Length: 451
Image (cartoon, rainbow, N blue to C red; front, side):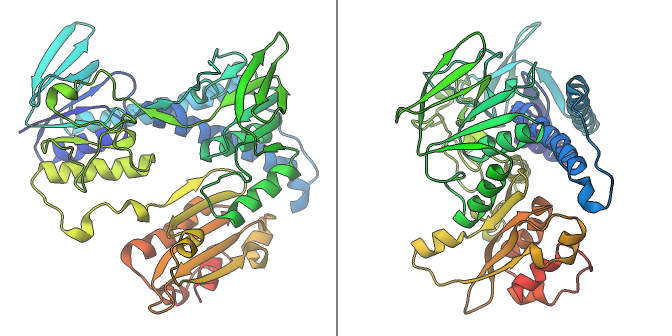
């Protein structure tokens, strides 16, 4: 069997790796970077910058832990070198693993040429490859509105900000979703003045209001200016900076502007029509629970599939696709359930959630049990001098089964894994409450909330 994968991000590389390990003849086509541009040019650099900002913040508040006050000054070239080094090591490691599994990697632009062939435009010319199965996982790119065009100097897209050539004195962030608030936290931690334009009445409009309130409180404490109920519609670029205009007449002036207004799928030029693959009006490729398109031997995954735009989801899709290509038709409980995917926002404090949200349950008229424990009651949080946030667990009042949960606080992205396992496995809150955990540890708040 010949399996051709177009796109070497988390979905494509995992599908290629797992299929090749089982003896499938795999060709992986990638035009940019093995590991995926959205992952290695967006996700990983942003988290590296956030880690540096977190280290600076920790140093700044070190006096609260019995140390003489000290200061950490940003080394921008050093930070850039650190990011480049991390990305290079991750890409090299992934290439090494793929090569060891026997995956053929081809650098170039891949496109379907009918349902059973892929044409790759390489530096040495075009190459046509026959395929029994094809995965298209070409990711996404930052969305750019008509009224603002990034120039890499004053107006930045997300991929021009890891880090920018010059650290902004005053950054105006447009977009208050997950990416936007991470940028606010990131640059505020690095010492920049920040204004966030919020089109709704809260940041993170799709998240629990209690969660958003904790983050807004932290932003305001750090001097972040919030323009709520304002939609950016224009920008003036001058010698000294930018002025962002909003639809209600307000304006925000700064040295730089950063756009964090979502992403668009990379569906153009893939030859999907020639293979008979359906693409929806937004450019996404609809898939079933096996990640198959309307053409059964052609799969789509990652951002292109229109599901949750998370590297973790794309990686799992890739593994499931490899199983299906090998003939492993998953039974119902092994199908991907996107409603049970854990996600995290790497602000300070961190935010993470999984499963059913409290607001959604109330909107559906569903009966739930909600228990909440603040980290202010945690010995470990007090030891860490960071008692912000809480653990919230949502369960079924009749059965005790954990339906979802939210965590705001230090290491929330790690702690949510416990609730993710509980939600996925259908565990009861009592299963968590009766577990004997380490003391002192932040995870104790999970057991207390589950009790």
